[in-house]
Length: 89
Image (cartoon, rainbow, N blue to C red; front, side):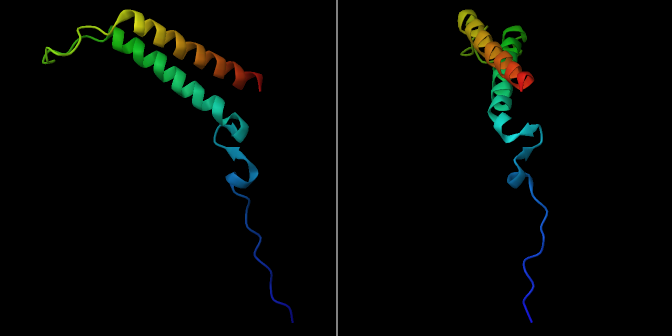
C-alpha cells in the first residue's frame, strides 16, 4: 500500500508569472507609468488650484513656476516612455 501524493494544486499568479495587467516583466513599466503620470498631473493641478481661504501666511501663494515645469516635463517624459514600452510589448 502506497501513500497518496500531494494534491494537485492550481497554479497561482506568482508561479505562472501573470499579474493583473500583464506579465511580470512589464511591472516596472506600469510602475513608471503610474509614478510619472502622478508627478505630471499632481504638479499641474497644484499650479492651477485656487489658494484656500484659511491658508496660513507661511504657505506659498503659488508653487515655484520653473521647478513645477521641470517636474511636469520629467513626469510626462517618464509616463510617455513607459506607455511606449507597454505598447511596444
